[in-house]
Image (cartoon, rainbow over all chains, first blue to last red; front, side, top):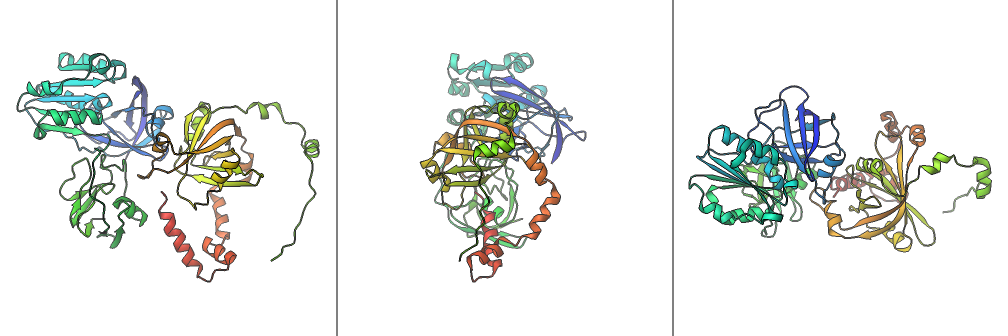
Length: 302
Length: 209
């Protein structure tokens, strides 16, 4: 956990504010493009936002937040009630969406999905690697950082306002793509689905705000053996592993509870996890908000 | 069992008025008919409220509601929504609202002396866009109570100040109380150890959603 002070909150597009946080005790933890942090809001909610500032600036973090009319209390709080000068605890940066080395990049952003891709474009450009951005939104007024992108990256950026221009032809983009280039895409689900249809899976990296709608086999009960605390917790078919652990008094921090943020990560010591997250859990890890066990027992380092 | 009843002398409203005098102008002027930005901020920081309803015959009932701050959603300047979390399923409030839609709310913010009172008309809903905003710990409530606001006003802090409600030292009062298990086993004449009931309650409290 790191303590920060809110340096500035300002609108950067229709329905989007940027929040600049300054480390209360000097330098903040370093991060790389694609990373996100948890904001612990005064209303007890924890929300994840991609870092979209400059990784070289160790004094400040910047995030951008779109107002969601169906807000459960995160974006609404940030837009309406968060005030400059207030202190805010934030997590260490985590990165499930790292920029892998490649001879070229295509970035495809939809709306607020620009946030993790902006530092990626900057890093690629600074490293002299050919990179371009296709940035899609309903209208230019609703798209954050348009001016910044235009002035810094000029013709590397193509802006597509769907209300006037329609949707971009991702298949056409794929056909002209350097065969060794990697594609990074972040945006709303329909755009990610279109990207998955257009680009080869081994070269496409996506980050989702909300989980993919998928169906899983009926959940079955299992036992979570917590090795460090020497407790065995039964997990019913109708409850998540995370809730079962929390209800048993074993507190596991959590964020999205949808398998996209990674805040509830646990280490698996034995047993066979049934991964249902959208992050891509490493071999020995599990996200208990959505994932379960394929074996009768799952031994956790907890 | 019969209990001796005391019935102190009742007064008419005129008699009460004669003793209290007329309200000061500011006391009634501060009542507004909607949720403005100040009250919206109040509700966004309130984790607890009491909700009063009554049935067609005027039989009254008051119930607590609590959750994370801002659990009551301000849908617009005239409309609130309160999630219905798992409880005892007695549904007193819903039964009352079906007969009489008058509803009175009192919002509290820990540490804040002034309280917010909101009165209006209430009804149940299962509107998905409203319930979606109330999802907590992966659970979405089945129902919510919509409140159409008629009156909203800040109430002065005297009651909270006199009661030392937010003074941490006041929590010593709870030490003078029996446990809930002791209380209920005594009241209901249950032939089980009070700890059994306390443990069962504690288990239930771990699952809040």
